[in-house]
Length: 318
Image 1 (cartoon, helix red, strand yellow):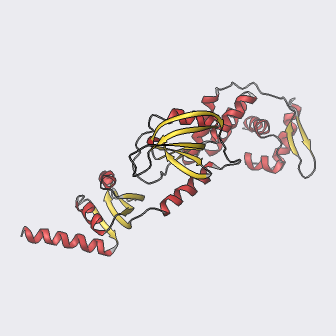
Image 2 (cartoon, rainbow, N blue to C red):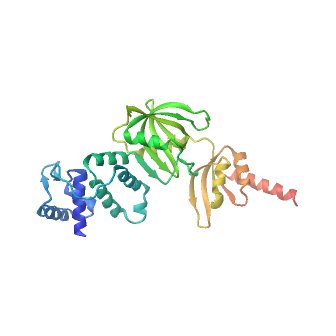
């Protein structure tokens, strides 16, 4: 166990540069006293660790020091580094092991390749929750070209069909990052100084330009994604409703032009769904086609409309 911790400490210093004893202790989940003992052990073993005192001090490795870990290609490293965004390691109780493995992945690479891989990984995000909670529609043909431009930090000329507009139109954009959420790929970009989010499946064509993208410095892709998603949801038109529907028929809601905003599984095999509909009449017709596998929970007037329709059917067939 200590040998693995010593290796992790060394890889942390190689990847991040100077770190304080407190920061190392927090990362390795040990006490600062243990960190000091481990630093002494590394020095005794011939690893060139040195200490810098003062307010900005800490521990660091001598410049140029490298390990003999097996290297990875930049593409392989990006695939592993971006997988951390899917939250799987934490869900499986392997968060600590996953962090340790990622440190080894990063440290195993040559300096130039490591910088490229970590930079690329910061431009891709994988999330469970999509823009809306409806099924994915595939990445489209432009994903490869878009991904290459995002990683290379180049501007893009795209032809894009906006929601509700069947005519694709040309746009010149500065890519920020790619997000895969609930089976869909989204491109976050700047278009004429304004924030924009594009569904990749709606990009008819994409051309990478020989110009650097004007990407803001220090972008936190996950925070930007969550902010844009909430802004989008706040702008959604329509009437909010809450429904209970059989899980097996959930996708039929989307086909009935019901916009699913959020869903919550229930133990009996149903889903409680927050959704948006055009109006009361639209909601009544959509739920009637799913009867008896759907129930209106809110608003009361929707329940009343469905009850009146059911009573009319019963009377007609009495």
